[in-house]
Structures are given as structure tokens and as C-alpha cells.
Image 1 (cartoon, helix red, strand yellow):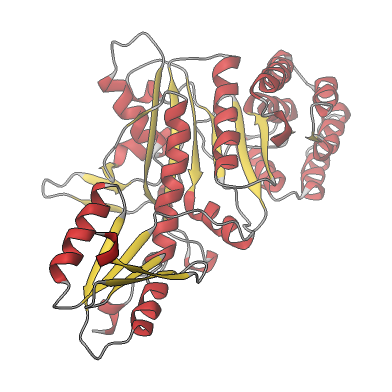
Image 2: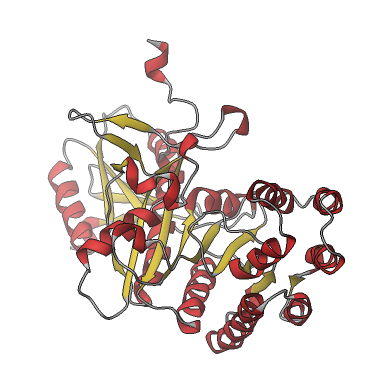
Length: 416
């Protein structure tokens, strides 16, 4: 019986003010995406396992929740919404020649190891721009991220931008086996450059390549580091990557979003399907990125359509944690409480109907004669209700603003 009363590890109930805040946050962020012309799409919570198989490049298959349907097909809860949108876009918009702008909000499920202490169910809100490989498309994505985070009330945040081709070119220049390259990627992600140097020394990698990896930790910052990166670029792909980042930064100024954008040329894509620019947004109050995104020009090929794409996902739960710790409040929908008696019931119902017709959210509660106003004030505060209208039998309304504590009494008979 005890097991039925608790949630499994890694998931939790969200209610009252926290739930209202989360939904208000999703509405605000969704409005920003709509302002950029993105249309909503909903994809299934679970898909055929093949949608997230290893070759797709999504979350590690070891961390997928897998199960079977009645016909014996292997299904998986989605760990990441982008492959689902890619699968849908490849079929639903097969003949569309113009770029497709889609946005979504939904929960994802990753079976993290218990010791990591991370949520296994997270809400992601994101956008995908399908059918366009251009500097303009890359910049639009970054500008949307900046505008969205500003809309939440955040002022201190940074969007770090890198490019897969740059770090990949450095890896290829080592001449190492794929397993060793993967080890270096992990070490770079952990900022363990001593470990990187040790591998390069042991494998006899040439000096110019080692020097490039030694400079890598310094390639974090404003647009000035792009010149440094260009100087150590080992091939034409790496140089083109730097040129593209410079052009993106220039266009970001037109959006007035450049102040929140910096560069990190050591950045690896968190997903294997990333193929161009990659970016993550960080702020105070959370140890993980609040936004992850990047270009994935070859993902739709896995679903039968060859078209370039770019997208991002805001991890809503991480963002909420950061806002809470930074004492930034998101204005929820206001609810109002009307408390009435047997004698004032018809009046209360009519009053509530009048307020609701004007878009105000009203809770009705009938009281007994011995109930005190304080009892309902305490309930309202617990339930994140912003104001109380206490109806007296003599047709007087005691109105209390529970946010400011301001009170006043209105005589309904005089109002008539």
C-alpha cells in the first residue's frame, strides 16, 4: 500500500503555485515562438523503438524506457522530442518546398542511473526550423532563445555557441581510433585537458595538433576568440565553421541579441545527430543547461527525407529551478475566491458568472454560519488565490487583496 502513495524515483507531483507557475511559464515561452511564426505540433509520448535507435543519435539506448505492445513491437517513451518531430515532418510535409516552422511542449523520459539524482521525467518546450540551411536560420534560432529567456524575467544568462565541424576537424587531425576520440570528447566535456594532453602524448600526435588542443580551453568568450580559433583551424571545414559563426554574430546584432551570446569552440554536441552549430544556454541557480540546441542536417534522412534542419529545446524544469533560486517570479493566472452563505447563494452564483464572463477565474465556496473569515483567508493563501470576496447576509461584500493585505467593504444595496 505504501508504494501506491509515492511516485517512483525520478518523477514527482507538481501542484498549487508551482504548477500554476510552470503553466504560466510555458504560455509565455510559447507566445514568443508564436510571435516568430512557429506553429504547434504534438507528437506521441511513445514511439516505435527505431525512432530513437542508436543510429539516430539521440539518447543512449541504455537510458531508454522500452516496452512491448500486444503485437510484440518494441516501443519507447520519448527521451527527446526532436526525432519525433523529424519523423512527423518527413511524412506530413513530404511535398512542402518552403521552410517548416514547428514548436511543441511535452514531457521526455530518460532512465538515468539512480546515483545521478536527476529527474527522469522532464518537460521540454522547443522549436524546429525544417528545410533551411542558412546563417539566417541559425541566427533566428539563437534570437528566439534570447527573447524567450528574457521574457521569463531572466537578465543574467549566456547562450554558448560552438560548431561541430570545428571540434570534429580537430579530432580527425589526431589520427586516433574512434574509441580514443570518444575518450577525448568525454575528457573535454569534463574540462580535463590534462587527460587530453596525456592521450595525445602517449599516441605521438604531432606538435601542431597538440598545440591546438592546448589552446582549446582559451577558445571561450566573445567574438574575438573566433580569430584565435581560425588561426588553429586544421582544415577548410574548420575555417568555414568559424566564418559561419562570425556571420551569425554579425546578424545577431540586428536582432539585438548579441549581448547574451558567447562562443565555446570546445563544445561537443550532446546528441549524435548534430551537424553544424550547437548551443546551450546557462544561468545561475542550476548546474545544467536550461536550453540545448543545434543544427541536424542529416536527421530527417533517417526517416526518408533529405532536408536541413535546426532546433532547440528549453528544459522547463531546469529553468524553473533557476528562476526560483534567483527569486524571479512568474506571474500566474490570478484566481479569486467568493465565500457565501445559504442566504446569499443566488447572489454569489450570479456574481461569479458576471466575473467569469469578463475572464476572471472564480472559486465558489459555501460557508456555515459558525465559519470565520480567517479560515477562508488561510485556505486561499495555501491555494495561491489572490483575492477573497466574503459575502455577508446583509448584502455587504468584504473584499481582501491577499497579496497586499488591502481590505475594503462594499455595500451591494447602495451599488444597486
